[in-house]
Image 1 (cartoon, each protein chain N blue to C red):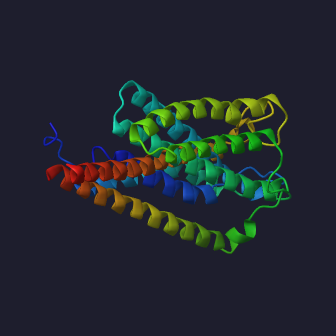
Image 2 (tube, chains in turn cyan, red):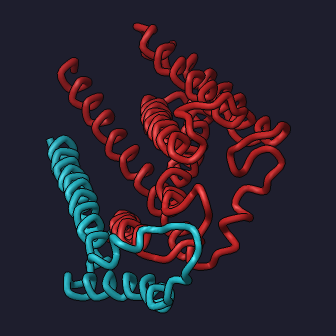
Image 3 (tube, rainbow over the protein chains, first blue to last red):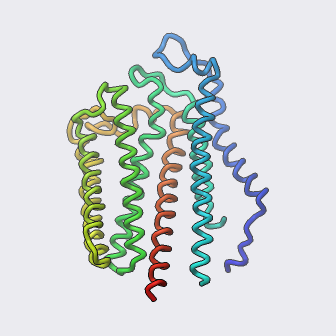
Length: 88
Length: 223
């Protein structure tokens, strides 16, 4: 049963992932394009105008990606260990 | 990959939340200002905690029906992950309170309820570490875990609604009605809840696998 389930090629997986990301981002796109109304409570406009909010976004994404990559590598190491213990 | 698709989903959702959570427009509200974006990070901690604690109780019940070390380990690691998420939720909530309500902590039923519930779960860890016999530890802590869940959930979600509270989702307020009307926020909030909850399950699964491995190696050494 298990041997029949061939895992798809990495290219197809990445394509699927990108499609999912696109599906999540597309509905948001329109909202991003909207203009901010004036004379209302103060928001972080200056940060966005200077483009600096994107710096924060990138930093957070890097931190999060690092943590997630660590989790993935931990997961794989564990799988290898589990296999070793099982085969012994 | 067939079995691990949900981990890939976790990665995608959390990266999406980090980007969209900061960039997608939010309602312009006085006092809250941009801090309304904490909704994507603070609130999912509690969703994730609740989900993982439900899993923990499930394995505690299964342990009491069929006592195997595996169920005990699963219940324990799930509870630990839940406690971690709850602590992060308390700290993030405290920071948010400082800059919106003006104090790190208020004697609010929602806040005190959550704190007491976390203490009850803290006692679970203390109780576990006080046994030397594994079976006794597993049995008593399973029973305590079920009790802790039954006490903690009303403290989180029922009692705060019976009185007045600053915290949204308490004092008779329907939980998200005020913010959730905004459809832009919903596009980020729901993926955030799913993403952080999945992350809790991922962490708990890794911790469980380490404990199971440890047990197996230990058993081999004895044999």
